Length: 267
Image: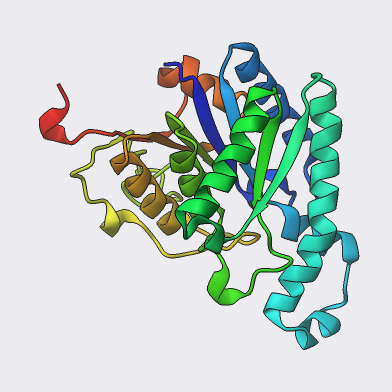
């Protein structure tokens, strides 16, 4: 399967190691895959988490100090430091492929009016038209709680719809949605989710260690985006060549696909 424009969301836990530092090897592998997609003529918009986790690992603040800081203040501090570090890495890695990247920092309120939607759309459309890869993240340095996205899953869904993407690939650290506990060896991946399916009973509410989201937010976003006519894939970003395999060898790798049709309209 091939698309002309893709949104790819990469979660914090995909981009960071256990100690919170950026996993440069994994980032490099993902960049290589995105470069290949572009070589195939596919426009890519990257929604990347990892700034807060990267900033936290960079500053090495003692726990006593972070205990005294407000949670929002922590996010602002870590994001301000980490976003610069994260983008610097992306610039270096994409430069090896002669790809220019541009940063798009946004907030939930920027999607609240037609005028602001149009401004963002024009910005990213101009980048794509000139071969520049948009890298989108929430502007955590100025966001306060009531203005924040639920997480970057929500943001990726809004961006995919705003930019008329044909598909959204959400990369997590598990292979997709399971019909039981992922840790249970008898559990199986739910390969196809139709619009009239209800898998809410299979979704647990736990959130990831580094990010704000979890499978619940991915499921909610995926259902909403698929209902708008955009194919959604949830896959494991730690797997080698996962982006290329999802598109070219779907039978060879596990993932969950959210179909844009109901069972009745499957054929």
